[in-house]
Length: 285
Length: 61
Image 1: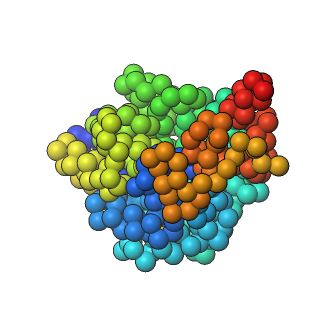
Image 2 (image 1 turned 30 degrees about the vertical axis):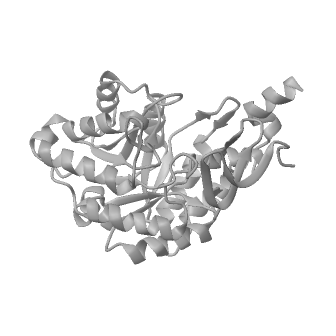
């Protein structure tokens, strides 16, 4: 792992990712969650102005339901580019219940996204469903990302996925730096405790960078820990629809503004999009 | 075939939307977009197999 408390002391810049929409809940959970391309584009402009350098995107149909179609992602990307100056676009390739070939479709926009998520293994959904994310799918998604010059964001939902990440590194050549998102929350996720956070970052491969994601009420404390231990941070309505207990967040931008204030107070400068590209090695892909 | 408990509505209770959204008449709530794919048996999903709400209500009837 690269970073750690030394990176905090060295005031390394922090990359803020805004997960605007997600693929699980929608406006039924928070009416401020953007679903249409125009809403997502507008939200991207606001989070970029607030300090985010990466937007993590899912696609929806007009009634808010999930879409994996390239055309839907293209429409969203076009809207994001209209509303932003230079933000890094990261597509989700997640998709519980979707066939493997469908999971590739978000990688096929023109131009391709600079980044895309790559789920490291299985996770349970509801009571009778598992998102499998087989090694074969992980490898085939990674191969297409390499072919299209897309940086994978390796999503580590639990500590077993740290083994899967190392297995991926054994099977395939990944461009450096390896960039992993450590995810904490209920269910299949790593239980959200400070001890588990420290354990996860200690078990990352040498040289890997990490992004920190806490679900629900864990978003703010885990973002803070990410800042303190030299990590990068993801916030947004995909992961947390509340601003504080009992109060729905007004927007993704409000969540980004709060973590920018935290970073400022803690002495971590917020990375510009150019700095984020440099940290992530995006120009070299 | 879609779940028999699925309806598309623009409003229910205190919630209203511009587009009709998936509503579960068994749970009496608008459902998450991910769950709506189960309700509609999209992709490899099957409400009879994957939805605990349908299964519980089917057992009760």
